[in-house]
Figure 1 (cartoon, rainbow, N blue to C red):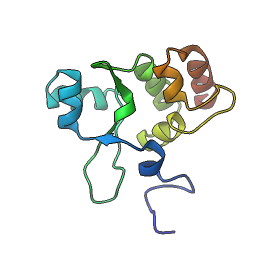
Figure 2 (spheres, rainbow, N blue to C red):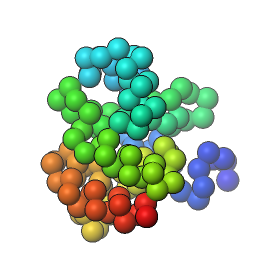
Figure 3 (cartoon, rainbow, N blue to C red):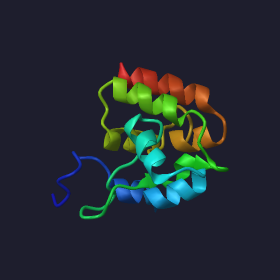
Figure 4 (cartoon, rainbow, N blue to C red):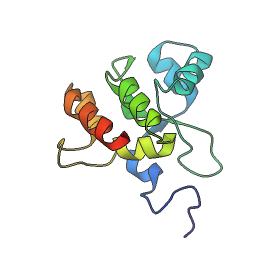
Length: 125
């Protein structure tokens, strides 16, 4: 298998679709790039390297109307506390789940976060 950065999982770059760099995220959020870095470090915003050799990027779907999508920080924290790394958390958020229904990130963007949070807690613990 050519992708050494994933474990039998989907290609994160394709799964997420649209990625933005830290500079673009800072513009959309109206904050500095260093604040974006802090949000990523504190699991308030997700980021990964979608293509080997490129820098770390943020899924564009995590930002909506100038803010981090409501519920994303809580879900990322729950998943990280449960042992998920950044890539695994993003794969979970961007993979369709019939019990939600749809992708967890889309449910969060549509203000349907309760079930997403329940599923994240069940997955993490």
